Image (cartoon, rainbow, N blue to C red; front, side, top):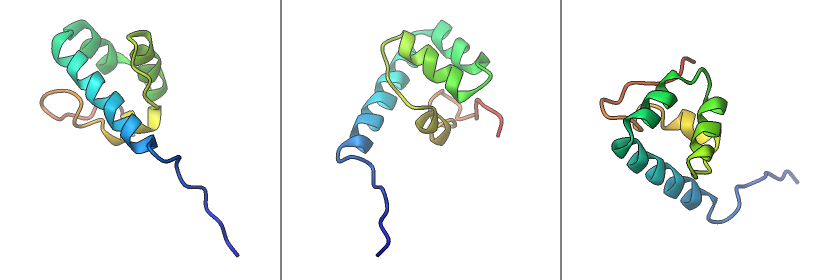
Length: 78
């Protein structure tokens, strides 16, 4: 019998809440938005977000890279 590892219950909600919090911060803090745009990787962006009190995974940032900043332009290269 095959098994698969599913995300913990509520993990999606926590990620969505963190992304919403980050998006709000980005709208009110242009220097944070610029720092995220200038970050070379999603890992670096996640560290910057953590420095501002937002715990978000690099994977969540990658999945939402075109929706975090106004204009919808991707931030990180693939």
